[in-house]
Image 1 (cartoon, rainbow, N blue to C red):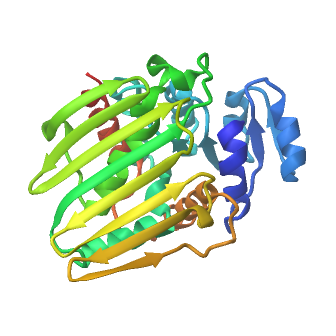
Image 2 (image 1 turned 90 degrees about the vertical axis):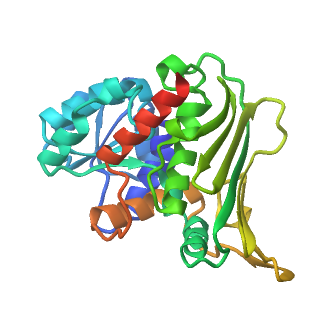
Image 3 (image 1 turned 120 degrees about the horizontal axis):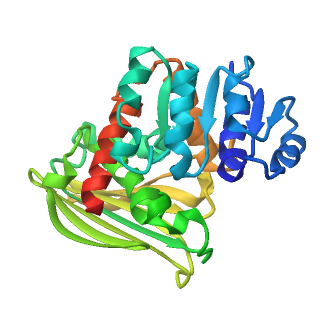
Length: 315
Protein backbone atom coordinates (compact mmCIF):
# COMPACT_ATOMS: atom_id res chain seq x y z
CA UNK A 1 0.00 0.00 0.00
CA UNK A 2 3.05 2.32 -0.09
CA UNK A 3 2.72 4.39 -3.30
CA UNK A 4 -0.98 3.59 -3.45
CA UNK A 5 -1.64 5.13 -0.04
CA UNK A 6 0.79 8.04 -0.49
CA UNK A 7 -0.29 9.10 -4.00
CA UNK A 8 -3.19 7.17 -5.57
CA UNK A 9 -5.66 7.39 -2.69
CA UNK A 10 -5.19 11.14 -1.91
CA UNK A 11 -5.46 11.98 -5.63
CA UNK A 12 -8.65 9.94 -6.03
CA UNK A 13 -10.13 11.63 -2.95
CA UNK A 14 -9.55 15.06 -4.53
CA UNK A 15 -10.93 14.13 -7.97
CA UNK A 16 -14.55 15.04 -8.69
CA UNK A 17 -16.74 12.03 -9.40
CA UNK A 18 -14.26 9.56 -7.90
CA UNK A 19 -14.14 7.83 -4.53
CA UNK A 20 -12.24 4.91 -3.05
CA UNK A 21 -14.62 1.96 -2.65
CA UNK A 22 -12.11 -0.83 -1.93
CA UNK A 23 -8.42 -1.35 -1.13
CA UNK A 24 -6.19 -4.42 -1.08
CA UNK A 25 -2.83 -4.98 0.62
CA UNK A 26 -2.08 -8.56 -0.43
CA UNK A 27 -2.57 -9.86 3.10
CA UNK A 28 -0.15 -7.60 5.02
CA UNK A 29 -2.93 -5.97 7.03
CA UNK A 30 -1.78 -2.43 6.21
CA UNK A 31 -5.14 -1.60 4.59
CA UNK A 32 -6.78 -1.22 8.00
CA UNK A 33 -4.24 1.45 9.00
CA UNK A 34 -4.64 3.23 5.65
CA UNK A 35 -8.43 3.16 5.89
CA UNK A 36 -8.33 4.80 9.31
CA UNK A 37 -5.57 7.29 8.41
CA UNK A 38 -7.28 8.46 5.19
CA UNK A 39 -10.80 8.43 6.65
CA UNK A 40 -12.05 5.98 4.04
CA UNK A 41 -15.42 4.27 3.94
CA UNK A 42 -14.50 1.28 1.84
CA UNK A 43 -14.17 -2.49 1.69
CA UNK A 44 -10.86 -4.17 2.52
CA UNK A 45 -9.58 -7.21 0.63
CA UNK A 46 -6.48 -9.33 1.16
CA UNK A 47 -6.84 -10.82 -2.33
CA UNK A 48 -6.76 -8.51 -5.35
CA UNK A 49 -8.99 -10.86 -7.38
CA UNK A 50 -11.83 -10.37 -4.89
CA UNK A 51 -11.39 -6.61 -5.21
CA UNK A 52 -11.59 -6.78 -9.01
CA UNK A 53 -14.75 -8.90 -8.78
CA UNK A 54 -16.47 -6.40 -6.47
CA UNK A 55 -19.52 -4.72 -8.02
CA UNK A 56 -18.59 -1.51 -6.18
CA UNK A 57 -15.37 -1.16 -8.19
CA UNK A 58 -15.53 0.61 -11.58
CA UNK A 59 -11.82 1.35 -12.03
CA UNK A 60 -8.90 -0.67 -10.65
CA UNK A 61 -5.88 1.46 -9.71
CA UNK A 62 -2.77 -0.75 -9.75
CA UNK A 63 0.09 0.38 -7.52
CA UNK A 64 1.47 -3.13 -7.08
CA UNK A 65 5.09 -4.15 -7.87
CA UNK A 66 5.87 -4.36 -11.60
CA UNK A 67 6.24 -8.14 -11.64
CA UNK A 68 2.55 -8.46 -10.66
CA UNK A 69 1.17 -6.12 -13.36
CA UNK A 70 0.58 -8.70 -16.07
CA UNK A 71 -1.34 -11.10 -13.83
CA UNK A 72 -3.56 -8.35 -12.39
CA UNK A 73 -4.16 -6.76 -15.81
CA UNK A 74 -5.25 -10.05 -17.37
CA UNK A 75 -7.80 -10.56 -14.60
CA UNK A 76 -9.08 -6.99 -15.04
CA UNK A 77 -9.48 -7.69 -18.75
CA UNK A 78 -11.37 -10.94 -18.12
CA UNK A 79 -13.72 -9.18 -15.70
CA UNK A 80 -14.01 -6.12 -17.99
CA UNK A 81 -12.72 -3.59 -15.46
CA UNK A 82 -11.25 -0.18 -16.31
CA UNK A 83 -7.63 0.20 -15.23
CA UNK A 84 -5.08 2.82 -14.18
CA UNK A 85 -1.69 1.13 -13.85
CA UNK A 86 1.63 2.30 -12.46
CA UNK A 87 4.57 2.47 -14.85
CA UNK A 88 6.45 0.85 -16.54
CA UNK A 89 3.60 -1.47 -17.67
CA UNK A 90 4.86 -5.00 -17.12
CA UNK A 91 8.24 -6.71 -16.95
CA UNK A 92 8.66 -6.84 -20.73
CA UNK A 93 6.72 -6.50 -23.97
CA UNK A 94 6.13 -10.26 -24.04
CA UNK A 95 4.78 -10.04 -20.49
CA UNK A 96 1.95 -7.66 -21.49
CA UNK A 97 1.61 -8.46 -25.20
CA UNK A 98 -1.97 -8.27 -26.47
CA UNK A 99 -3.48 -6.69 -23.35
CA UNK A 100 -3.51 -3.15 -24.77
CA UNK A 101 -5.41 -4.01 -27.95
CA UNK A 102 -7.96 -6.15 -26.09
CA UNK A 103 -8.59 -3.37 -23.55
CA UNK A 104 -9.05 -0.89 -26.37
CA UNK A 105 -11.40 -3.17 -28.29
CA UNK A 106 -13.63 -3.46 -25.22
CA UNK A 107 -13.66 0.34 -24.76
CA UNK A 108 -12.19 0.00 -21.28
CA UNK A 109 -10.30 2.90 -19.68
CA UNK A 110 -6.61 1.96 -19.78
CA UNK A 111 -4.01 4.44 -18.52
CA UNK A 112 -0.43 4.16 -17.28
CA UNK A 113 0.70 6.76 -14.74
CA UNK A 114 3.46 8.62 -16.55
CA UNK A 115 2.95 11.48 -14.15
CA UNK A 116 5.51 14.07 -15.29
CA UNK A 117 3.52 15.10 -18.37
CA UNK A 118 0.70 16.18 -16.04
CA UNK A 119 3.00 18.37 -13.91
CA UNK A 120 2.49 22.16 -14.07
CA UNK A 121 6.01 23.35 -14.93
CA UNK A 122 6.59 20.48 -17.38
CA UNK A 123 3.62 21.83 -19.35
CA UNK A 124 5.07 25.35 -19.18
CA UNK A 125 8.31 24.00 -20.64
CA UNK A 126 6.41 22.19 -23.39
CA UNK A 127 4.66 25.44 -24.38
CA UNK A 128 8.02 27.23 -24.65
CA UNK A 129 9.26 24.53 -27.02
CA UNK A 130 6.04 24.39 -29.03
CA UNK A 131 5.91 28.19 -29.49
CA UNK A 132 9.55 28.20 -30.63
CA UNK A 133 10.41 30.62 -27.80
CA UNK A 134 13.77 28.86 -27.48
CA UNK A 135 14.19 28.47 -31.24
CA UNK A 136 15.05 25.13 -32.83
CA UNK A 137 16.04 22.70 -30.07
CA UNK A 138 19.72 21.79 -30.21
CA UNK A 139 20.11 19.83 -27.00
CA UNK A 140 18.00 18.25 -24.27
CA UNK A 141 19.88 17.09 -21.19
CA UNK A 142 18.50 15.14 -18.21
CA UNK A 143 20.47 14.81 -14.97
CA UNK A 144 18.65 12.80 -12.28
CA UNK A 145 20.23 11.91 -8.92
CA UNK A 146 18.37 9.96 -6.24
CA UNK A 147 19.54 9.14 -2.74
CA UNK A 148 19.03 5.40 -2.27
CA UNK A 149 17.77 3.97 1.02
CA UNK A 150 19.88 0.85 0.40
CA UNK A 151 17.01 -1.63 0.74
CA UNK A 152 18.79 -4.35 -1.22
CA UNK A 153 16.18 -7.06 -0.82
CA UNK A 154 13.24 -5.12 -2.25
CA UNK A 155 11.91 -5.75 -5.77
CA UNK A 156 12.92 -2.20 -6.79
CA UNK A 157 16.56 -3.27 -6.63
CA UNK A 158 16.05 -6.30 -8.90
CA UNK A 159 15.80 -5.83 -12.68
CA UNK A 160 14.22 -9.30 -13.01
CA UNK A 161 11.28 -8.07 -10.88
CA UNK A 162 10.88 -4.74 -12.66
CA UNK A 163 13.36 -2.72 -10.60
CA UNK A 164 16.56 -0.90 -11.53
CA UNK A 165 16.87 2.64 -12.92
CA UNK A 166 15.73 1.69 -16.44
CA UNK A 167 12.36 0.38 -15.28
CA UNK A 168 11.92 2.78 -12.37
CA UNK A 169 13.20 6.09 -13.80
CA UNK A 170 14.24 5.92 -17.47
CA UNK A 171 10.66 5.05 -18.45
CA UNK A 172 9.57 8.46 -17.09
CA UNK A 173 12.38 10.24 -18.93
CA UNK A 174 11.60 8.65 -22.32
CA UNK A 175 7.94 9.55 -21.88
CA UNK A 176 8.42 13.20 -20.97
CA UNK A 177 10.97 13.69 -23.77
CA UNK A 178 8.31 12.43 -26.19
CA UNK A 179 5.84 14.79 -24.52
CA UNK A 180 8.13 17.82 -24.65
CA UNK A 181 9.12 17.26 -28.28
CA UNK A 182 5.58 16.20 -29.33
CA UNK A 183 6.76 13.00 -30.97
CA UNK A 184 7.33 9.27 -30.45
CA UNK A 185 11.04 8.62 -30.73
CA UNK A 186 12.42 5.23 -31.70
CA UNK A 187 15.17 5.37 -29.09
CA UNK A 188 16.58 1.98 -30.09
CA UNK A 189 17.49 3.42 -33.51
CA UNK A 190 18.84 6.72 -32.13
CA UNK A 191 21.38 5.53 -29.54
CA UNK A 192 24.84 7.08 -29.90
CA UNK A 193 26.17 5.98 -26.51
CA UNK A 194 24.93 3.56 -23.86
CA UNK A 195 26.34 2.61 -20.48
CA UNK A 196 23.85 0.87 -18.18
CA UNK A 197 24.16 -0.64 -14.72
CA UNK A 198 21.47 -1.61 -12.22
CA UNK A 199 21.56 1.73 -10.40
CA UNK A 200 23.05 4.08 -12.99
CA UNK A 201 22.94 4.84 -16.68
CA UNK A 202 24.50 7.20 -19.17
CA UNK A 203 22.96 7.50 -22.64
CA UNK A 204 23.19 9.78 -25.66
CA UNK A 205 20.65 9.89 -28.49
CA UNK A 206 20.46 11.88 -31.71
CA UNK A 207 16.99 12.85 -32.94
CA UNK A 208 17.40 14.70 -36.25
CA UNK A 209 19.39 17.78 -35.15
CA UNK A 210 18.66 17.43 -31.42
CA UNK A 211 21.20 15.86 -29.06
CA UNK A 212 19.59 14.06 -26.11
CA UNK A 213 21.74 13.27 -23.06
CA UNK A 214 20.45 11.24 -20.11
CA UNK A 215 22.34 10.62 -16.87
CA UNK A 216 20.67 8.83 -13.96
CA UNK A 217 22.28 7.71 -10.71
CA UNK A 218 20.70 6.11 -7.64
CA UNK A 219 23.13 5.74 -4.74
CA UNK A 220 23.45 5.84 -0.96
CA UNK A 221 26.36 8.29 -1.45
CA UNK A 222 24.12 11.03 -2.88
CA UNK A 223 23.43 13.68 -0.25
CA UNK A 224 20.64 15.63 -1.99
CA UNK A 225 18.25 14.17 -4.56
CA UNK A 226 17.57 16.34 -7.61
CA UNK A 227 16.21 16.10 -11.14
CA UNK A 228 17.20 18.67 -13.79
CA UNK A 229 15.90 18.95 -17.36
CA UNK A 230 17.86 21.40 -19.51
CA UNK A 231 16.60 22.40 -22.96
CA UNK A 232 18.93 24.46 -25.16
CA UNK A 233 17.70 26.13 -28.33
CA UNK A 234 19.14 28.55 -30.89
CA UNK A 235 17.42 31.48 -29.16
CA UNK A 236 17.75 30.56 -25.49
CA UNK A 237 17.78 27.98 -22.74
CA UNK A 238 15.29 26.67 -20.18
CA UNK A 239 16.08 24.52 -17.15
CA UNK A 240 13.45 22.73 -15.09
CA UNK A 241 14.71 21.89 -11.60
CA UNK A 242 13.08 19.46 -9.17
CA UNK A 243 14.30 18.85 -5.62
CA UNK A 244 13.15 16.74 -2.70
CA UNK A 245 10.62 16.85 -1.14
CA UNK A 246 8.12 16.63 -4.00
CA UNK A 247 6.10 19.83 -3.66
CA UNK A 248 5.47 23.17 -5.37
CA UNK A 249 8.14 24.97 -3.34
CA UNK A 250 10.89 22.56 -4.40
CA UNK A 251 10.80 23.14 -8.16
CA UNK A 252 11.37 26.00 -10.58
CA UNK A 253 11.71 26.73 -14.30
CA UNK A 254 14.56 29.05 -15.32
CA UNK A 255 14.45 30.69 -18.76
CA UNK A 256 17.23 32.73 -20.39
CA UNK A 257 17.58 34.34 -23.82
CA UNK A 258 20.74 34.53 -25.90
CA UNK A 259 20.00 38.25 -26.38
CA UNK A 260 19.37 38.96 -22.70
CA UNK A 261 21.35 37.78 -19.69
CA UNK A 262 18.35 38.18 -17.37
CA UNK A 263 16.88 34.92 -16.13
CA UNK A 264 13.11 34.54 -15.86
CA UNK A 265 12.07 32.29 -12.98
CA UNK A 266 8.67 30.56 -13.01
CA UNK A 267 7.34 28.82 -9.91
CA UNK A 268 4.34 26.60 -9.28
CA UNK A 269 2.21 28.40 -6.69
CA UNK A 270 -0.32 25.59 -6.39
CA UNK A 271 -0.51 24.91 -2.65
CA UNK A 272 -3.59 22.68 -2.87
CA UNK A 273 -1.45 19.52 -2.81
CA UNK A 274 1.26 18.73 -0.27
CA UNK A 275 2.93 16.26 -2.65
CA UNK A 276 3.49 17.05 -6.33
CA UNK A 277 3.00 13.41 -7.29
CA UNK A 278 -0.55 13.63 -5.91
CA UNK A 279 -1.16 16.75 -7.99
CA UNK A 280 0.09 15.05 -11.17
CA UNK A 281 -1.97 11.90 -10.57
CA UNK A 282 -5.02 14.06 -9.86
CA UNK A 283 -4.44 15.91 -13.16
CA UNK A 284 -4.13 12.56 -14.94
CA UNK A 285 -7.44 11.37 -13.51
CA UNK A 286 -9.24 14.63 -14.25
CA UNK A 287 -8.04 14.95 -17.84
CA UNK A 288 -7.90 11.32 -18.99
CA UNK A 289 -11.22 10.23 -17.53
CA UNK A 290 -12.95 13.26 -19.04
CA UNK A 291 -11.13 12.74 -22.36
CA UNK A 292 -9.98 16.36 -22.48
CA UNK A 293 -6.36 15.78 -23.47
CA UNK A 294 -5.26 17.19 -26.82
CA UNK A 295 -1.98 15.24 -26.74
CA UNK A 296 -1.46 11.55 -27.32
CA UNK A 297 -2.60 9.68 -24.25
CA UNK A 298 -0.54 7.48 -21.93
CA UNK A 299 -2.89 4.61 -22.73
CA UNK A 300 -1.81 0.97 -22.89
CA UNK A 301 -1.03 1.06 -26.62
CA UNK A 302 1.35 3.98 -26.11
CA UNK A 303 2.80 2.35 -22.98
CA UNK A 304 3.29 -0.88 -24.93
CA UNK A 305 5.50 1.07 -27.36
CA UNK A 306 7.48 2.48 -24.39
CA UNK A 307 7.88 -1.02 -22.93
CA UNK A 308 9.41 -2.15 -26.25
CA UNK A 309 11.83 0.79 -26.10
CA UNK A 310 12.92 -0.16 -22.57
CA UNK A 311 13.39 -3.80 -23.61
CA UNK A 312 15.62 -2.81 -26.53
CA UNK A 313 17.71 -0.53 -24.30
CA UNK A 314 18.14 -3.28 -21.68
CA UNK A 315 19.42 -5.73 -24.31
